Image (cartoon, rainbow over all chains, first blue to last red; front, top):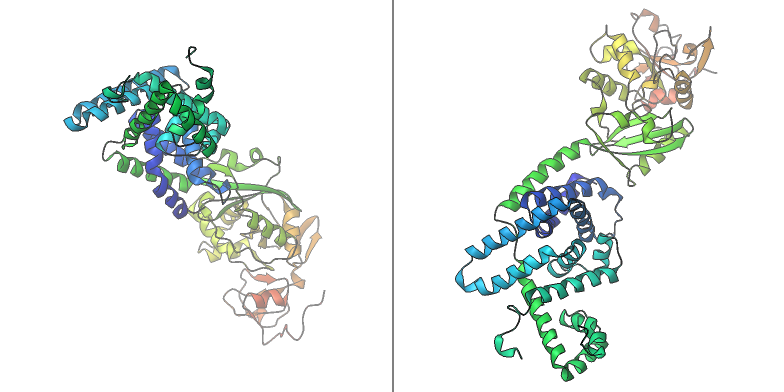
Length: 175
Length: 322
C-alpha cells in the first residue's frame, strides 16, 4: 500500500491506540514506544490484510500483543503499576475541589484496574473504555469471545469488591 | 458468597450483564423478576450500575497535553524511514528457474535468479544492508505473471516503475538507465553503452555495472554484448540464459570456436545517431567511421523502435532471409 493510504490509517487510529496503551501500560514513554511499534508492525503487515478487515480491531490486537510482551517481565510490571498510581494521585491532587469526589472514586477504580491480572485489565480496557466487541477482544487475547467476556465480568466484580461500597451508593440507600 | 441462596448464585452472571446493558431481553426479564423479590441482589445490581458509572471517568484522556502531537511526529519520522527501507518480495518458479522479485514503495527494485535454493535465504536480499524485507501481500502477483508472460513470448514489454536504489553506484545507475532504453529485439556492444553514458573509454566498467544489474530482464542487460558479437558475462556467467532471452526476441545466435555469439550477417544494423536501419551489406554503411552498432533481429523490431528502412539498401524490399 502506498504511504498516503497508510497515513489515513495513522490519522484515524493513532490517538486511540496511544491512549489505550497509556491506560494499560501506565508509563508514558513506554506507551509511546509501543504505539509507534504498533504502527510500524501494522505498516509492514498492512498489505497482507484482507480488504474487508476491521483495521481498528486489528490495530488493537497488535497493541495488545505488544502490551502482553511488555509485561512479561514481572519487575517492569510492578514498576509500571507504581507509575500508574503515582500519576493518578497527581491528577487527583491537582483537580478542582468540585470534581474531587467523583474523581476520587475514579482514581480508586483506576488503582484497582492497575492491579488486575493482565488479561482482565486488557479485556476490561478494550471493552469498557474503548468499546470493542468481545469477538475482537478475544482475537487480541488469543481466546474465545466468551472467555473475553468472562475476563471483563471478573474485572467488574473485582472493581466492585475493591471499592467495598466506597463511593458506589449514597449512604441513605444502604440498608 | 456461600451463604447466598442458590437462585441468587444462578442469576449472578445475568445480573451483571443486565447492569452493563449487555443482556438478552429474556435475561433482562428474568433479572427484573428476581430483583423485585431480592433486596441483596437489588443492592448488588445498583452497585454494578454505580461501577459502570465510575468507569466512565476512566474514559478521560490519559495523555498530558502535547504528548499526542509529539508522539505522532516521532511516529511519522519512523514511518518515513521504514517507507524508504521496506521491500516486499515474491518467489516463483519460471522456465529460467526460481525467480525472486522485490519491490519498494517506489517501484520494482530487484529481479533475481535464485541459484542456491528457492527461499529468501538464497537471495542477496537476506544480507542486503539497510533494508527490511516482508513477504508480498499480493501486489507482486501481477508483475510476476507479466514476467512469466514475457518469458513465454506473450509479452514484449514490462512497463514497471523501477527503483534503482539497490544499484551500487551512481555510475551503475546511469548505465542501467541507458540499458533500460534498449528496444526489444536489439543488441548493442558494451562500447555502445559506454558511449551513450559519455564514458567511451569505460567499456570494462560498463560490463561490470551490467554484471551486477539488480533488475535483469526488465533492464535488458542481455541485449548488451561483446564487440566481437560474443554473448559474454551474463549475471555472473549464465551465457545460456542470455542466449535464451535473446532467442525469445528473435536474435539469431551461433557458436563459433566454442563461443556463443550473435549472427551479425543475419541482423539489420543501425549506425549511432542515424534514423534509418540498413542491411549489413549496405553500401553507404561502409563509408561510415567504425562505431558501436545497434543490431536488430528483424525489420519489425527496428521499426517498432522508431527507425525507418534505409533508402539506399532498401531492407524493406530486400529483407534478410534466414
